[in-house]
Structure formats: structure tokens, C-alpha cells
Length: 52
Image (tube, rainbow, N blue to C red; front, side, top):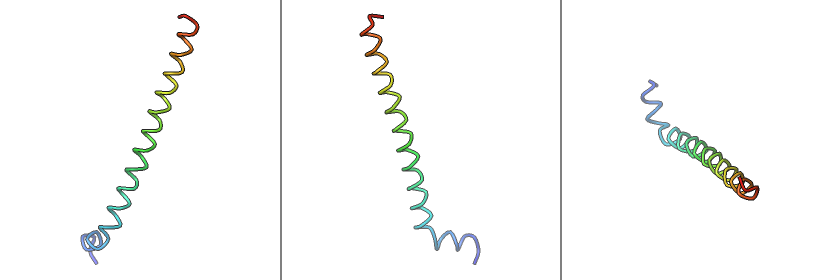
């Protein structure tokens, strides 16, 4: 079985794995952005409370 045949035969699983991996990466990135945004909001809240 050549590489192309293997890819063709396993395309659904390969595609699914890549989609899943991409989703995981996107979820991690979104979570990181969300935490950063929350930290910034909290930071601004603290600054405004101190009157800076």
C-alpha cells in the first residue's frame, strides 16, 4: 500500500484527528485570552479603586 492509498483509506480518521487537535488548540488559546482579559479587568478595577 502506497502512502497515497494509506492517506485515502484513512482520510476520515486523519481529518478528524486534525480537526480535534485544532479545536483543542483554539480552546486553549481562547481560555488564555479570556484569563488575560479577566486579569486586565481586575487590574483596572484595582487601579480605579486606588484612584490611580
